[in-house]
Length: 120
Image (cartoon, rainbow, N blue to C red; front, top):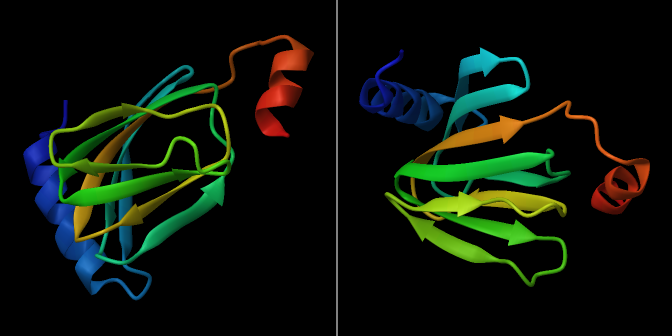
């Protein structure tokens, strides 16, 4: 298994040097389970996007803000926080240089009504 501390510092440095202020690496891919280390330089964001079937975000370093399309579930998360991503569209902004571990579960069969409600 990869060392998260090493990945944190490597990707933080890469994000600080990248023109888009980002660096990412998928570290686990097992069927529907995926874990990705994502680094964002301060002020950079992942624009609003659809949520996977299930997801968590664990802040490894820094301070991030997770926003939801409704605005009801907006939250600012410091280092060490673990947050369950809601099933609505959301975005992530690095308040300061930040690295987080995104864990997602995708591709699970779900009733069409639930899938439609989640993506609309």
